[in-house]
Image 1: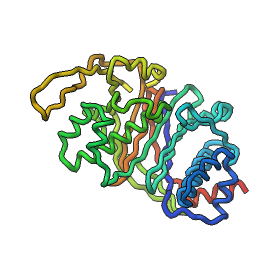
Image 2: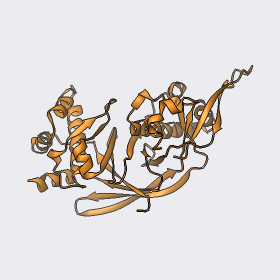
Image 3: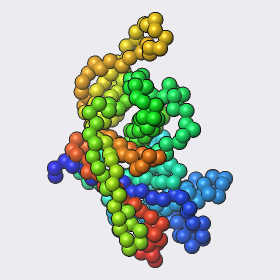
Image 4: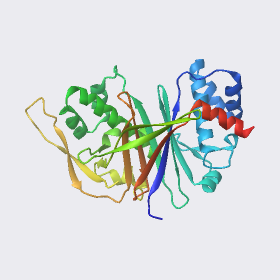
Length: 317
């Protein structure tokens, strides 16, 4: 083993989903009573259909890694609601997964490892023009993030906001703690980001095509405050060449100067988190964070379409 870990991202469509009973009935038959209850809690039919297909896509994709059929997957949930495989199937398959959806797209990340525990979080974001990014930043971004963003040109500020938001979401989803982790207590260092290209393998029936876009690596997480060992201590054996930071208060007479700065006081920690950012196009970006791997993350991205979902149904017939 060379220490590298492969993560496959699956991009699924959530636009113009069919409502015909033939396919929706099949997916419904795959789900547990608990999942069906969650689907039926949505009042609008289109929201119910989307929730149904999100679960159908997940089950069908997991079955690409195992002879376990879509209807046979069993899930458990963490304290903050993060889904995972039941312990028996986790041990059997070595699979960890996470999912996120935004408007037209569902993103499912899957990694498989039988050798040690890893944790995975993914997020996909649609850059909504109506979002008041400055109000959100004041509540959820670290001071250094706000300062760095405000130095960018106006158009670049909005792009950076959604980049950072996707990265933060992927991290708190990887930890399984969700918003119990303050988003102001950590930030991502973009100063040495490494740009690469990733190929999206698209399948449309018998035809296959490739689409290329940019991804960014070398985005270490900087944790703020000397209480990091308490708030993130359970992950200390996992997580990316990170730094700890203390918060220093400064008094200034300049009303335009932020009076709080982040000062790096410890240049390394024992954690090993790796985060990757990608942009599908001008409207969508995604991020993933993996904990527990010091080696290189090998990233692959495929589409999984309604045709693939229908084929999975035929394979199980």
